[in-house]
Length: 186
Ligand SMILES: Nc1ncnc2c1ncn2[C@@H]1O[C@H](COP(=O)(O)OP(=O)(O)OP(=O)(O)O)[C@@H](O)[C@H]1O
Ligand SMILES: Nc1nc2c(ncn2[C@@H]2O[C@H](COP(=O)(O)O)[C@@H](O)[C@H]2O)c(=O)[nH]1
Image (tube, rainbow, N blue to C red; front, side):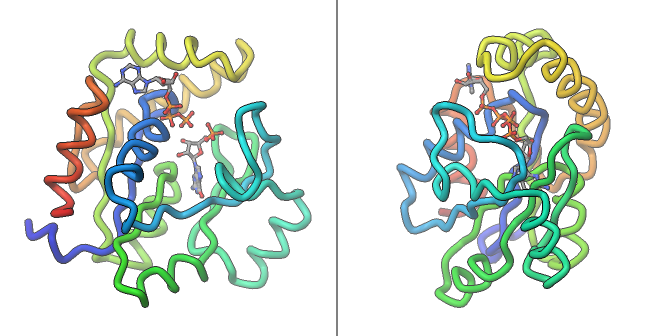
């Protein structure tokens, strides 16, 4: 597969596998890559900043953006909150010739592949189920109920892993980033 011509990269994988951690490290090493900042109706975590981690918006505002066609893709994730990719920022980055990374869930990944068939879907895989549970619980940002919901979604996402163009195991963060840089031709 000639990955070097792909401009849109979707990074997906179960909650807690390390998508955010790996993307942050990749961003430090490759500042020329555009990392989309998603919209979400979820409340910010203490460590998160509006406009950096996400654009935190109300349900009403989110719906208006969807209705106005301003989302490249959007989904209700873990059955609770809406998340979506603002279309314009992605189009501007592509017009500037920058590779684009979308860190989104599988429902969104499927929509992107439908609209932009040339986009590549990279699925981040945990070293084991137990390690995934350990990471999600260890992060400590969700209560027990939300963790269980995320783990239920994780089972479905792992079952759909074969839909991805590439599967990369996230064992060691630095190794994972090096593998992504190599497969994305960055
Ligand atoms: N390779 C790794 N080895 C050990 N711990 C890791 C690794 N990658 C990430 N982690 C840790 O796992 C936890 C979950 O990581 P992160 O928040 O990046 O996951 P995520 O896939 O973005 O989750 P979500 O989809 O819920 O946002 C964090 O505490 C992070 O520090
Ligand atoms: N379809 C989309 N999914 C998204 C987007 N931004 C993030 N996500 C996914 O949501 C879950 C939960 O994220 P969290 O920050 O609440 O832990 C995670 O799997 C993300 O990949 C998006 O724009 N569209």
